[in-house]
Length: 427
Image: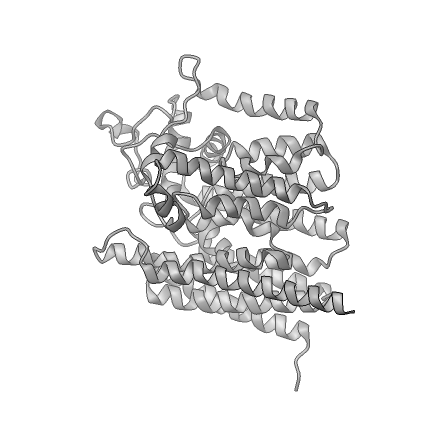
């Protein structure tokens, strides 16, 4: 008996739920085979679901409700699991805590013996304790606000999951407004990266993704002030989306940009040090930190790391300029490609950095990025081998799997477009 598209989606949702349930139970063994194997199964089920979404014009609302419900369920399963001992979220708790105690997180070095009394059981395990915080001011104020409600990693993870769900509702609104099938919200909601990096580890990026999604939606509706302010706030969470600035050219008025700049500027006021803006350890991060960076590593042999970092930013800007020449009511791939180009050349490419692209992957032109958001999950293997005493280096076979998969997807996309072009000319 041939299954209907709805029945296949029910089945794929069940597979995703089972696979991610196993992943959540093995979350403390991040990167181990017991974690990576079910994660790979979840990734395969997700790709099959994307095929169903693309091949079916419309699904009944009950399928969408089911999809969002199972997504919420596996989010809860990961939410209840404690993050890793040295995950970034412990730094978030520290930053929020010291702000509430009257200190500047851009100036404090957490492992300073004089600050030992300020630590809690959750902040003593924060990573890179020899450096002050690198996170921009919107992130810092978010840490402060959430820890004021409850000072814990669970409170922050809960806030991040709420941001995640809010993105899904923004996307639903955009899909209705543009006339696209509402079922495409599942292309976002079902992505395994959200389970592991938002509900599981808890990363501040998802707040920036929410703000950027709001900005893109406002831009599509020609609400310039909202688009500019949300964009400025997203950049003040993490600097990655700054490369998207050309997409706003002649779509947002200068007075709206002035308002956005004023709002972003005010965020820095609580962190001024004798009237000067401090960026904490951000410079050290760019200069010294390296992970999953094959392109950056190759270029760094020829020029300084700072110059190569500039090349990464330039790659994003140039891509955004090129994408700006294309018009679309919903920016979609126009937002995904510049950030992908910048990250491709970046010195550090952690899996959660690709969260920024997830709301913008509903078009066929973003297939290589979509594959990359899944193949990058293989880098979790590094966390596992580190527990075995091996170096903090991404093995060559993982790099080949991660970037090779995206490259193959790019070749397939190019060949498909060439074939379609020939068919049109022949017709």
